[in-house]
Each structure stands twice: as structure tokens, then as C-alpha cells.
Image (cartoon, rainbow, N blue to C red; front, side, top):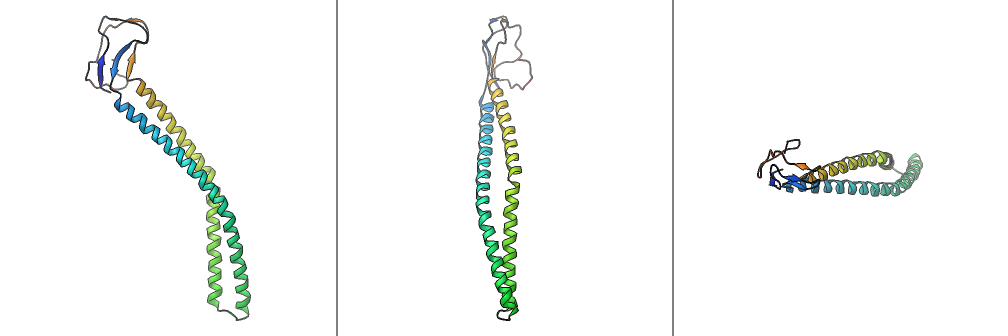
Length: 170
């Protein structure tokens, strides 16, 4: 951050908690806001995943029913096809419809089976983003440098307008 102001001079007595240096907090504040929005985004994704899972469970019942209907239709078509009452093409169409429905059912089941893994991934990302948010909030607090203990300021290594990085002596 950029040093905004020095609140003490060399040789000045300070007490624990006194403000020593004020740094520009605008960049650190932007990082905090970005991290907060990332946390909210992941929370929304988790909610969406839970809703998706509920929908998949409900749709699974319907898809099983549709497979049963397609199987029944295929059985009827097979009987009539053997009696030469319908064409081979009609039988093939019903068979294809059944296979399509079975494929959709398997895809739905896969979505349901993968739900715990997707949810675990999102929850892990949420923890990561929350940790990053906490770190950026700490960085924001560090833009106000205070005296860690009572003492005398022996030397200042920065002046207003200078850009400082983490770990630099102030």
C-alpha cells in the first residue's frame, strides 16, 4: 500500500495502540470485497447444487416410469410385429425410444451419484475462499499501523507517498 501519513516523529514517545502510520486502504478494501463476492458465489453454487439434486431425485421417479412405459410399448410392438400386424420399422422405432429413455435414466442416476462429490468440491472451495477472505481482512487491518508496546520511535524508514510491500521495515 501507499503510505498516507506518518503520525509520529523520530524520538517521540508512544503508548501501545497509538497510531504510527496510516496507509491507503483502498486496494486492500477492494480485495476484501472481491473475496466476499467469491464466498457468496460459492454459497450460491452450493445452494444451486442442492436444488439440482432435489430436482434430479424427483425426475428420477418420472424417468423410471417412462422407461416402464417404453418397455410396455416395445412388448406390444414386438407381439404385433411377430403377427405381421406392424412393420419392422415401427418395432425398431419403439426399441430406439426405449433405449433413449434408458440412456436418460442412466444419465440422471449418474447425476444423483455424483452429487456428494460435487457438493464436497464446492464446500472445499468455500472453505478456501473463506480463508482468503479472512487473510484479506487482516491485510486491510494492517493498513493502520499501531504501536505494539510503549516505547520511543527511534527511526522511520518510510515517508508519505511511498509504496511499501509486506515485510518491509516501516
